[in-house]
Amino acid sequence: MKTIKIIAIAILPLFGFSQKMKVQTAWRALNDYESTVKNGKPDIAYLDKAKDAIEMALTHEDTKNQGKTYAYKARIMYNYYMYNLNAEMKKLEATVADKRERADLAYGNTSTKEFEIANECVDKIKDIDPKYMEVIQDGFTKGTSQLSEDDVKFTLVATQMKMEAGNIANGKYKAKNYDEASDYFYKLAYLNMALTKKKDTANFYNACVSAARAKNNSKILEYNKKMVDLKIAAPYNFVAMYNANMAKNDTTAAMAILKKGRTTFPDDIELLNRETDFYLQKGKQQEALNNLNASVEKDPNNPLFYLVRGNIYDNMANPKDANGKDMDKPASFDEWFKNAESNYSKVIELNPANKDHLYNSLYNLGAMYNNYGGYIQTRAGNLTLAEAAKKGKEMEAQAQGYYKKAIPLLERALEIKPEDRGTMSALRKLYMMTNDQAKATEMNNRIKNAK
Image (cartoon, rainbow, N blue to C red):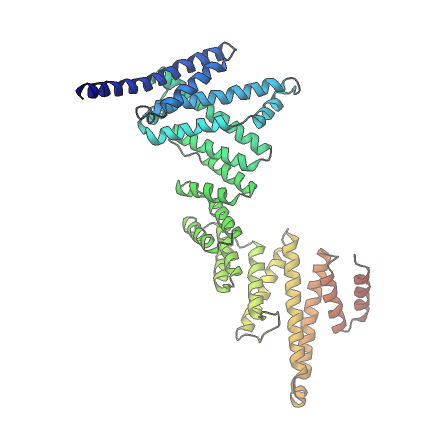
């Protein structure tokens, strides 16, 4: 029994030593391969030998959690990627003369599988061996003179990986492959953080924009959230997450991220507008008005704010039921009607370059006058004989007054959209109501001839 125990104790360190020998084998084969690359005749057999050895080293407890083991694997896998990329460029020489075009095609054609594994190795080093990663980071920030030859080589490969990740990301983006571009901008941002200890705001942002272009909601949420978690977010990130959650019909999550964005950037007009839109969709008119009032204070010459605010007051003054039927006028009708009138008029006064805003304000105000004239006329028609004798003519004159105020507004609206049949029909009716038969006939013919 004693003999068996002695043999067992002797075998274990020998097995551990054999695993370290695998790392040495990988190191030697990798260096041999890099020598053949320098000589212009890369011998892939050395790289295969290095890969086999490092994979065995990564299965044993003695070497699988060492940063240097993964540094060797990162170098090996990156060399595989470059070998394949260079082979693809060589192949394209026969058909593509332009070097830039040839490079773009090669990046598009070459598999990124080995590159991604190399990138994962860098992330792994950061997780399992932070002290070794600190050594490499110091090499980036303070110079490589303090590093060993192997660490310098790993640092150089990591630097090249950063450059290649950028090339791949930009190449995918130019090719409109936005989904893959977002992944590589994200990898590049992480790689920069891992190697320099600095937050790469620009490439995280590029990843977010690419994910938005790809319409990939899961990546939009993940990548923008990362910028928020890293405290490098801009208002854009919160707006993007809000939109992604709304696209998923998750209004609870959408409102939660919007509130966080409003807290982080209380003065941002875009976030304020999104919150206003949300309140409008949910029928929370007073909350929407509060936001619009704040928006007007921040940007008093923005016609859109007045247009939306006018529309809210218009709807409050003239409520309709679920079937679109007019309801009774509210107690605050006069106040809300005047508020709608003044806001629509403000847009017209500002005469915005966006003619849709101007058209909507002209049409809405004209329609509001027309509808109120009709409301007064209907009430006049419902008067008793005694009431009609006292108020009938006055109410009829009021109705006519509102009709006549509506006409020039709708005529201006029609100048902006001369083919709009709805505006033409409204004007034809108003001309008839104000006894302008000539214009009514003219408008009727215009409607007939409209496309």
